[in-house]
Length: 166
Image: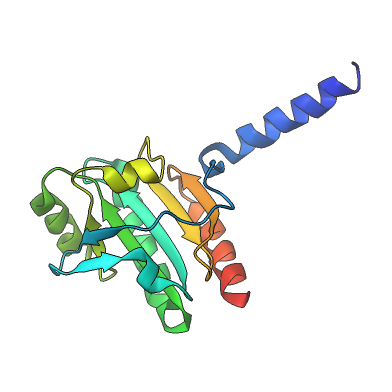
């Protein structure tokens, strides 16, 4: 029993250190497909992006960390879209006009989709904001990040680069 305590303590500290970067039950599973209306009015389907590395970022206008993270996501989008990276922002607000105001004020150019019924958020087990999901080219969930704190974008960068090299 003595040998088990350090192992359990190490596992607990490892989980605690990751904080919001914890994994979820979706990791390693095929990403649930969905279609949502985008800010341009067209419907976009996740499966249309198969063959590319995809980041899905669930966000809301009332979420402070979402607002803080958005410009950093825009940077990643601009930097890697030419090499097979796609970023989809999934807004869960009931009022799409508020989301559009935020998108415009922040200068966001990646596709923004509206999940006003929260059906896609439920598929992806979103319980707090933001949640960021990274998919490999085969459409498999490889990383799930819950929340945002300054510095998380470095993890995103490492993971995106790794998935683009595969």
